[in-house]
Image (cartoon, rainbow, N blue to C red):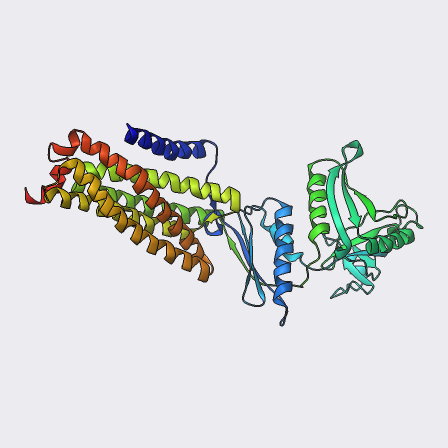
Length: 450
């Protein structure tokens, strides 16, 4: 009865969780090479302090996550100067490129005037401390902006909310030093009538005016409201602006060194190829186990479905909780792990055959065989887990995905052997498939001699 309870629990947990995941879209998060998206390498100036580079990565991660629409962004340092940015699942590549490019210094600047771009000499490299002629985001209007020392580092908070009349607003809070500077800038702007370009304060990022709100009064105390409009478009603009204001300034100026776009079609093709390879490998393994081990082969086939179901759900849970993504290298690790799981069944089944040939009865052969086999399985799987851990610790890039998949699958192999395989074989041995017929356990044990 105890065996039946364990089997029911294991099957319900594995198959039930897989069914729940499939019907509720609770599935593993796919990496860039499977989902498609954008990968870029950004390079810092030579001699950049490693701590500053780490701070830059932290700011970029918070900023890109705040933009939204990017599934599990991966941002990390490579070497002493490079930052690798991977944005899986990006649908609006131009917007993602804009986010990647907008990594420079944020500043608040008095507007001295405006003109059409062809009417003025635009500033080639904008220095926030100097007057400049720079473009808006659309490139249709040039702003003459004054130099400033009020930078994005003075911003404590920026939150997008719905204000009066359903219009979106960005509530801005600056630190004490920034508050004094902001009051001086707004006091200068409020002297001019609404509609005069000089009545605006330009918010500049990477030498581009991202917005230029009009000023109705001098703002003291460090709190301000930037009013947008109503509707979904203005909501998106307000959200993006709040993110830019919070995370616009980076400790290090970065330049884009390379950019690689992976289309969703290519990613899907890679996933399909990996799944087909895994299914084919599983089919071959299952066929061999059924032919050679007969009724025991049925246990192994069901066990492989349990293994696969639990593996999918573990990746889904880790994806939601800690951001683990399934990559093409990870799929390769899963395919390799099928062989590891099959080896565990083979070790156990061969032990049973040896004990039966040594003269033990069926129950004793199954129990003794498992005790001896489980020690071997634990030893072999421990080596695999240590190898996977070392790969994850020392490797970079796709190899880490392989290591994660291999490690998770090997841990599951140990658990399944203990709670599914042992109980399933015990039930099989107690029934008619234990002793009678060529398809039974005894038939498989003596099959080579008949």
